[in-house]
Image 1 (tube, protein in one colour):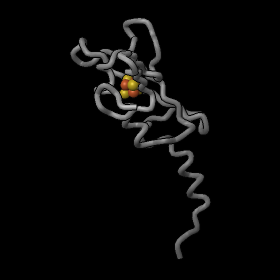
Image 2: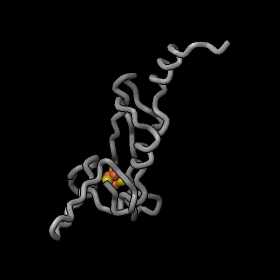
Image 3: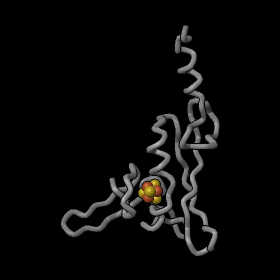
Length: 111
Ligand code: SF4
């Protein structure tokens, strides 16, 4: 679903049926303030880019809301974990590389 920032995100849910204006982020969920979700977080959130770049089913994203450089703005920071390699993923857009090694094993050498 498209976020208030106009970007497609699988974790955004909006219900506008019959005048309703229910919006939520199903990744951040309903945490108490100051770690609560507000629509402005979608503007700089890295999640839509990560999901577009890497659709790995073994990777789980963990959001943390932090203060930005100006200390007024809040930002979503993401850490990722791969359940297959059982390790933290340093660059979620690329992945941990574990599955890439498996694919290389089955490729025939070019002659
Ligand atoms: S905060 Fe990020 S993960 Fe949550 S709905 Fe907005 S773009 Fe998606």
